Length: 149
Image 1 (cartoon, rainbow, N blue to C red):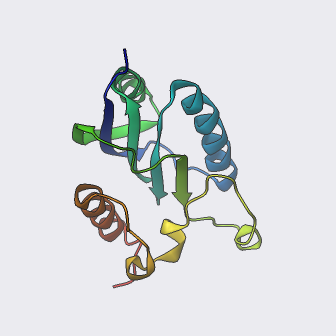
Image 2: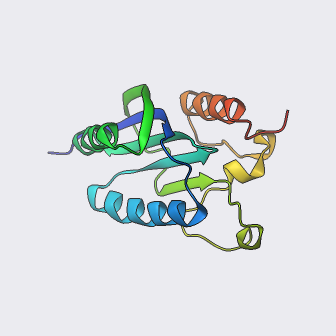
């Protein structure tokens, strides 16, 4: 029996700032692990702040969120939304973060989302995303000073 698609959006803070290498390793591990569970989504990291959208079969999404909730690398974790969805907004797992090594800016990273690096939401294409998700992403961007004033 097919489970309905489910989506959880949460924010948290990293207990320690993550380096470029740590974030790249996290992206690779998350992509591999989540693919096995049919979980997709988006994680943005900016100056220790995290917003993540995870979606997939309800059991898998809830199990992953329970695991994340116990992960000591997170502090102040707050679930913003949880709901059934008709279709995935992020059919692949992607992660965005500000790369600090200026020599790696043009380096291709599979699954990398440049929303954090663009610093201007006006040029971001939100086409196809629900209003609900757009609001959370824009609020996160403004609260973490991802975008220019």
